[in-house]
Each structure stands twice: as structure tokens, then as C-alpha cells.
Amino acid sequence: MRKIFTLLLVSLFAHSVSAQSVSFEEFLSQFPKASLPYSLSQEALRSQLEQRAGNQPVERPKLLEWQYYEFLPALEEDARTNRMPVYPEPVVALENETHHAVIYNTGRNFARQYKTYNIAVFDKKGKLIATRCIGGVNPVMLATAHISKDFIITIEEFSINWAKSYSTHGIEGNSIQSLTRLNTRIVKATAAVSDSLENWKNNPDLLENTHSQEAAK
Image (cartoon, rainbow, N blue to C red; front, side):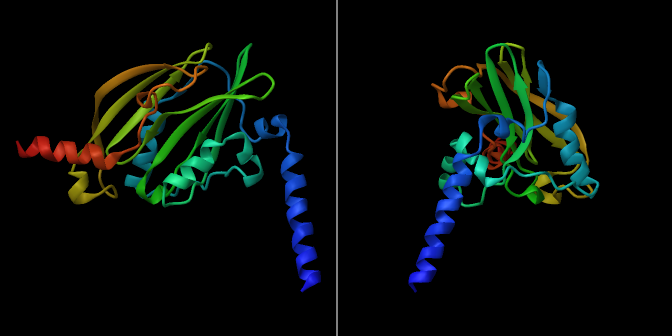
């Protein structure tokens, strides 16, 4: 028993040392580099749903390994407030003269076509400044994001109009007819989040219920 306990302590210590040895530069290296300005475009997000509608194979994304979670504390909060596990996907690393930023996806179950894109902004020393949700896609809506060189983000939200009712026919074998613009918002990524409205909410159930109530009128 004492031997097992000793091995357990050694294992925990090894994990602790491993976590402490991860540098901010190593964290950034997990993300493909991209230049500013950068966009999560309407075309790219729409194509995710069209791939699923056409029953096309979806490439398994690279996931961010657990030892890098310490740089993204919002992942822990996300895990606490949601029943489904978080599978963070590194998307891109961005940089200007004063800040670093990374975009990561916290999609949970792509069989449901949910993807949520978050941006975390750091100063040049690696201190986290702010994390916010800036876009995403699900079967009934998507939100695009255009990020300027100064990390000013324009978020545009659209509802998705399927050829056949999504609630009745689902996605497979369906096709997107058009997108309807719902709203536009502008946020400053280098500022702390002071209003919950600065975070885009990937909430397809709410939008579907709204559409159903409007159709019933």
C-alpha cells in the first residue's frame, strides 16, 4: 500500500512539473499562425453545415492538449457550466505590435453541427487580458467575425434558411437557400468583457423557439 501511495505522489508531482514547464511560447506554437486582419467568414462557416448536409466526411480536428489549459482559464469555467465535455480546437494565433491572441473552438458534438469560436488576448508577456466568444455555427444560425489589425471585432449574426424545414427534416439531404442578417455588433478584443452582450451565444434552441412563435402568429 505504501508503495502504491508513493507511486501516486510521484505521478502527481511529475504532472505538476510538466504543467509548470509549459511556456507561453509553447502554448502559442499549438496554434497555426495567421496575419491580421483575419476573418471567420460566412463562406467558411456555411460550408461546415453544407458538408454535413451532403454527408461528406469531416476531418477530425487537432485538439488542444490538457497541459495548455492553464493559459485559457475560461475552458475550466466552460466545463463547469456545461454537461458535455469540452474539446478545444486550436484555430489560429494572431499578433500585432502590442498583443498576442489565439482563436480556439469549443465545439462539443459536431454531429449536432455546433461550433463556438472564442478569442483570448494576451499582452506581450503572456498575461491574459480577456476572453470572449466571437462567432460560431449551428443548424439554425451562424455568426461571422472580422478582426482588424487593432483587434476591433465586427460580429455579424445570420439565421439560416433551409430548403426544407430543419426542425422537420434535419440537415442530411437538406440545402441552404439563404442567410438572413439578424444583427451586427462591434467589440474591442483587448478590453475586458464588461457586458454579457459582448459574448456571442451559440443558442440554437432559443432562435428556433422564436421562429416557431413568429410562425404561429
